[in-house]
Image 1 (tube, rainbow, N blue to C red):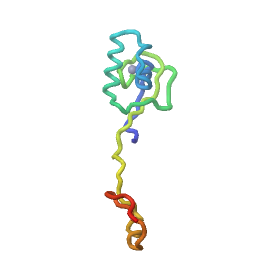
Image 2 (spheres, rainbow, N blue to C red):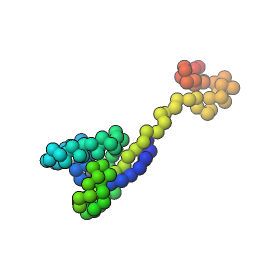
Image 3 (cartoon, rainbow, N blue to C red):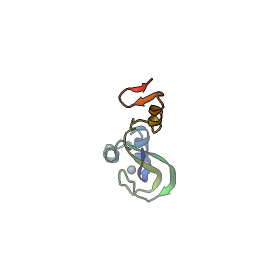
Image 4 (cartoon, protein in one colour):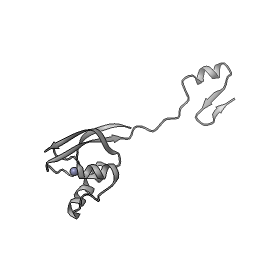
Length: 109
Ligand SMILES: [Zn+2]
């Protein structure tokens, strides 16, 4: 996976993105906002290394501008699946009559 984009999370959203923990929110309406935001972010959202102890930056999850701590949001995108193709040296091995690897059969003596 590689980074698709980065942004900022408020503490409420960061707790849900990191742990799925809504216990610190304490308000049903607010919890719904946060959960909707986390759902919009998709399954590959995680916490980055950066943070700001105090900021008015909009949370990229719930969209709040309430002042407070912000933690870096990192959204990953799925890379192409691991391709199991014949390694580059297989042609050489085949030419010399040595062990060969094929995608269908794996290693062939
Ligand atoms: Zn938020």
